[in-house]
Length: 92
Image (cartoon, rainbow, N blue to C red; front, side, top):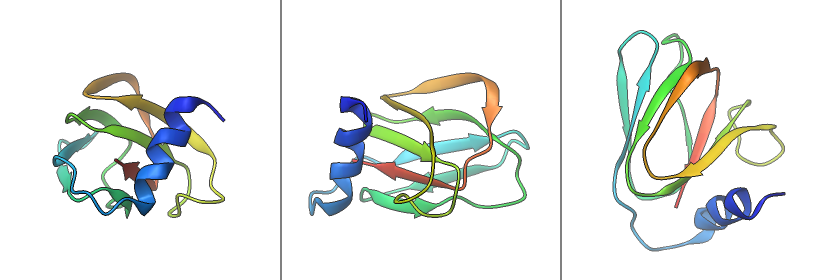
């Protein structure tokens, strides 16, 4: 497991608040995720094309952040060239 993914997953147990992260989908729909930890992504909007925020993140294939395959991870804002079909995100 990479240090970035491990760092993002460790945020799941953190009680500290994180800055909100805005997730943009293929459809143009936006979802805002606040307060860190694992969150299920809204369905029916296509893949994730952009993440805008200051926090570490990891996108997962399933609707759980544990036991699901990690699709992408990073720190800060990112725009994906190919939409990422994720079901959950952990920030922190």
